Amino acid sequence: MPPRLTSFADDARIAFDNLADRASGLVNPTVRLGVTGLSRSGKTVFISSLVHNLLHGGRLPLFEPVQSGRVSAVRLEPQPDDAVPRFQYEDHIRALVKDRIWPDSTRAISELRITLDYQSASGWNRLFSPGRLSIDIVDYPGEWLLDLPLLGKDYRTFSEETIALAETGVRSELSREWLALTRAADIHAGADEMIARDLATAFADYLKACKADERSLSTLPPGRLLLPGDLDGSPALTFAPLALPSDGRPGRGSLWTMMERRYEAYKSVVVKPFFREHFARLDRQIVLVDALQAMNRGPEAVQDLERALTDVLACFRPGTNSLLSSLLGRRIDRVLVAATKADHLHHESHDRLDALTRRLVDRAIDRIGMAGAGIDVMALASVRATREATVRRDGHELPVIVGTPMDGETLAGERFDGQRKTAIFPGDLPEDPESLFDRIASGVTGLQLPDVNVVRFRPPQLEETGGGIKLSVPHIRLDRAMQFLFGDRLA
Image (tube, rainbow, N blue to C red):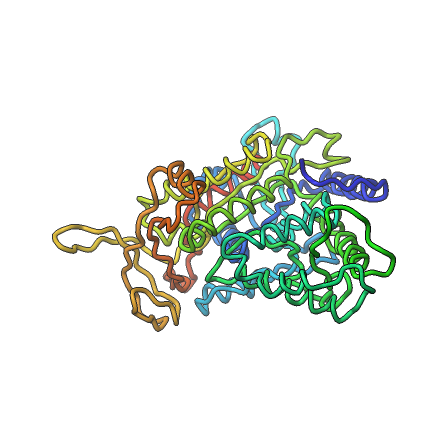
């Protein structure tokens, strides 16, 4: 079950916010779409491309309201939440289209409202509906989502689980310094600010090492230690798990008491406000994952991605919103898990990436014992940075992708300069993901995953029309994602 805020004050605040949203929706129908992702999965690029394609008439054959011609106008409007930073769409799309660089990744929450004027497909609805839908896109780091399960864990449980995970696989090497400090700490001694800071710094360094590209691990709570923002140096972020005895309670004024108090402060100051003010108000959600990067990093990264997806999906309760639930305890009634960077594969492997991600999600759903209703999975590319081609080698035709690798990227000993296009054979994903996961779960020593060449490409150079207007950003299955996430609200 997802974590719950049990205090009367929190529940009352959530109910009040949902009542306000419902009242506003009577005048201006709105769907709140949460966009998050796990470690460099492309949240900013997804939002920028979605908005650009809607505003500039992109090719969206699977997004029925546009394909049928029922959408008459699309525009950006001021967002409703004045205390939330605006998603800087214009800056991000300039980086993509003009500079051909990928925009900076999400480091805090932001929001953008895009409004569509449309004609309902139903004559009856046209009599009563204003034919207008606002989509409030709420962009937030995936690390924040992975913090939500902490609401249901006390400090002892958090410490035990975090240390146990840190002692496994590659994490045991990355956590060596922090674990040595933790085991040497006298938890019953008087609270010492310098010891607390050293422990917190070593713990944060361990989490950063797990997240680094060469490891690409996904399960990294507490997430704000990676993205401290204006809380950097505050007591609520200066804590770490401790090696605790199996029983007993902390003494007054001890290091144990200090760390436990700060862990609870982290939940109160950081996690609860995000849950109450943002997450609990969402209607739809997309979770972006970089499954290709995990495959490229090996079995442990794949297992860690599955673990993170289990924690993520445990936060959701997909289901149909009744009027009462919308007013008092809104449900997220559709969740899309999307594997990004499908353009890094030939289209012949897109279904395999889809199947691989679907199996990850199915296993996560089985673990937490929830139904899969309201959850969909797909492979997509928010921005298509490559095109497909074939080359002949040794009398055989090989499917390849063609693009401009980013400056500094290397493959087979060759270093790219960011200017020259090249053809790359991307490799093949397994046809049967079930057998792959069985082999990973068996813990076979030295297990080699299928070789997938993951090279970062520059954004594409967009062609211009005769009038000098640049065409919309190319994509793969972005229209299908739109249809699932909010196409029904434009029926």
